[in-house]
Length: 534
Image 1 (spheres, rainbow, N blue to C red):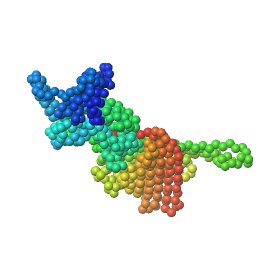
Image 2: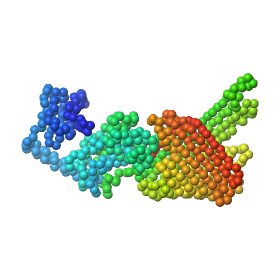
Image 3: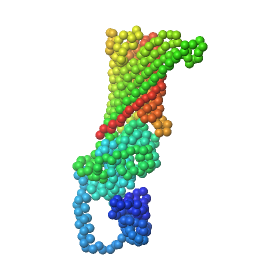
Image 4: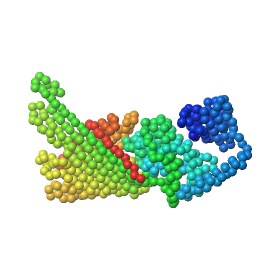
């Protein structure tokens, strides 16, 4: 058993620890590394197993029993048999553990920080985690070890990672991860995969989303820290595999590689990250009245019209984020029914108040690598389809609405979630009699769904879009406006209260402008999943 003094343990604490372990779990020996300077002896009255504490110039041996006092280790010439054993052991260790591993040959000096990053990158690759965390004291720097040159050997790995520990994995909400990496305690950890610049937190180069989930790998030591570690918000961990942290790195270094091994582990930032989201938003209102004495009971509440309204809004959103391209697809199905019966009037029965199916797919080529400025245009292509379950049947038109609108253009990413797009292409109302394909110019401003602010530990989300299109602008100028905004206030996961408003407007030549607006208050169920590819 080895006691790690990284948390300011002293020899007395080691003895207390040895005393507290009972029965079959009691070790044969407790070893304390890096004994504090100035400690020469200690009272061992309560020790139940031997305790050895060492530093480069001396050793303290605390033997159990009675009121005996620990003594400094004897120094002097070792017996010939001991010296021979030590010499042969040293030679064997040098031959066995001092040779560079097949995948450990270095093209540059490696510092302690770079070694820790390599270790975390290997753990991320092995566990397919986006983020990896270890405590800084887990990677040691004994005199003369760093910087490492030539190659990484088993002895280097053992000296740098002297404490065997398990690899633990978990799935963590973005809001919990943000709280951890921005807390003061984060400075005591090596964190790989997350960068913090003020309030700007990024995971593998992508903006951290509080409502998304991220896979994280760490050690058993950190998993057990409770409120002082990642688990401050009640995160649950699972043991990954059977190999220890040290064995994971040794196994990876056992495979020969060319080039700089610091760049060899799979980098999640260079691979696609998918985000899938399904929401179902429902609203229902019902007014029922029974008032046979209307002349007497003429209160406002008893003289209004009976009404029943039902609306469902289902959306499936899929996005892929890659350094070279971005893909977004939104499939939306809206359907509503309404019924009205004024006092003394005829019952309208249930009629459709909303009937729309739409799909928007956009792919963007990121021709500017690295940090992009908002004014740098990114070429894109977009396909938009809009249809319905049934024609309206009210005499306005008798053909089934099916609109196809492919366009190409340029997209400007104003922020990680807000973008502006300008495009041109074709617009075709497929089933309209004597339909012809017409040209179209489109503009769109959109704020993708995401965090607006937080109320305690609850993340309030919002989204906004405004789409302005001009069909055949050089001739009859048919203009369409689609815009909407929604605020989502979480009640408990996955249920949220939603407040929304959408408008649709149209202007054709000199005809009056027509507009329709929908205000909604409803409950939304959200199911989402993030997938980082490796």
